[in-house]
Image (cartoon, rainbow, N blue to C red; front, side, top):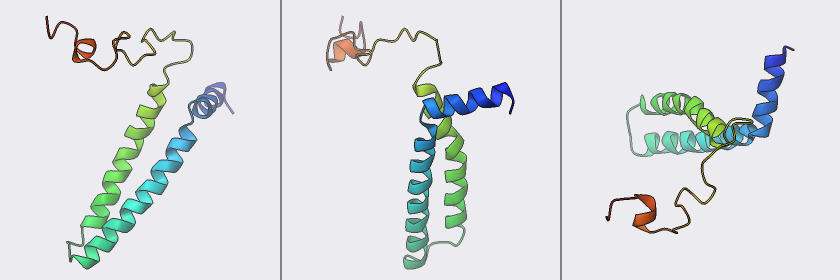
Length: 102
């Protein structure tokens, strides 16, 4: 294995992408089962299940990319505050949008 591939596997494990992938696969299977059942019961067009599959396949890399960047990059020293970005002002509109009420 090359060094880059090992690093990619290490980052995948560190960011729990395997868990995200597992949840996505299970949820996709459930969605496809529901679509298939509704297609037959409600007499929906036959192209609906393949369309759902294509949309789920398109969504997979988007979900994985989002999960990858959610935890930040290794050693980036993420400057974002850990309190949700509100600056300690709780859930007030003033804390979410500074200057909106001024």
